[in-house]
Length: 413
Image (tube, rainbow, N blue to C red):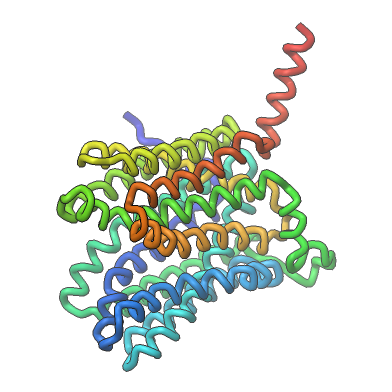
C-alpha cells in the first residue's frame, strides 16, 4: 500500500511551517511539565505557581493584536523569526532565574514572543495556501504541533529527573534552531516577505481589516467556534479530565493518560482527511461535523461512569478536534483580506480566551455542582458554535460555484 505524502501539492512554505511547528511544540512539551516544579522550588504558594503558567498565556493573549499589526507592516518572515527568538532568549534566562519574580517576568515576555510567532505563522499559512488547499494545509500544520506536543512531555520527564533547569535550556535551543530555520528557509519566499512601503492603502492596516471581517457572519462563526474549541478542548478538558478520572471514576492517572492518547491518536489520523473534506465539500459541513462531535463528546463525558464510556467520549472528542484544527482557520483564510494580521490575531485570541477562562469556570462549576455540570457547560459552548455553523454561509468559492451550477442544472430539468 502506497503512503501518500501529506504535503504533496502544497506550497513549500507550508512544509517549512510544519517543521517549525514541530520544533516549537517539541520544545514546549519538554519544558511544560517542569515549569510548575521549578516555580515551586522558590517556596511560593500554589496560586503563585499557577500565575507563572498563566502569565505566558495572558501576555500572549493581550499582545496578539499588536503582533498582527506588526505582521501587516513587516511581513511574516521577520515577525515569525523574531517571535521565536524572543521566546528562546526569555526561556534561557528563565532557566537562570534566581528569584520567583524573575521567572514570572521572563515567562510573560515569552508570551509576547509566542503571540508574534503564532499570528505570523498562521497568517503565512493561510496566505500561502490557495482556497482549495487551506483546509489540508491547516491540518498538516496542526499535525506538526500535535506530533511535537505528544513527543515532548516524555522527553521532558526524563530530562527533569536529571535537571529541571536543563529543560529551559533545551527548549531555548529548539527555538533557536526553529528561528534559524525560519529566517533561512523563507528567505526566497515572496509570500513571507513584504515591502510595507509599497502598500499605501490605510484600509489594509491596523484594525481596519478586522472591523471589516467582523461584519462577516462566517468569520464571527469561526471566532465563536475557535473560542469554544479553546474552552472545551484546550481549557476544560485538559484541566478536568485527570481529576475526573481519579475522583469520579476512582481510577488511577494511567487511565487519564490513555484517554488523552486515544484522543490525540484519532485526531492525528483524521487531521488531513478532515482538511480534505473542508477543501472538497466546503467549510460549513466540516464545521458542523467538528462542533457536533465536540458537543456529543462533552455530553458523553458528562455521563461517563465507567472507563469504557470515558474512552468513547475521548475518542469522539478526538474526531471533533481533527475538524477544529482545519475548518475554522480555512474560513479565516477565505474571508481575510491580503493584509489580515489583525484578523488572524483576533481568531487566535478567541481560542486563547477560551483556554484561559475554561479551567477557571470549570473549577467553579465542579466545586458548586460537580463534574457532569462542568462538562455540560463545555457541551453548551460547543453547541453555540454548532448553531452558528448550521446557519452560516459557505465561504469556499469553488464549492459555492459548484452548488449554484447544480441548482441551475436541476432547475432547467
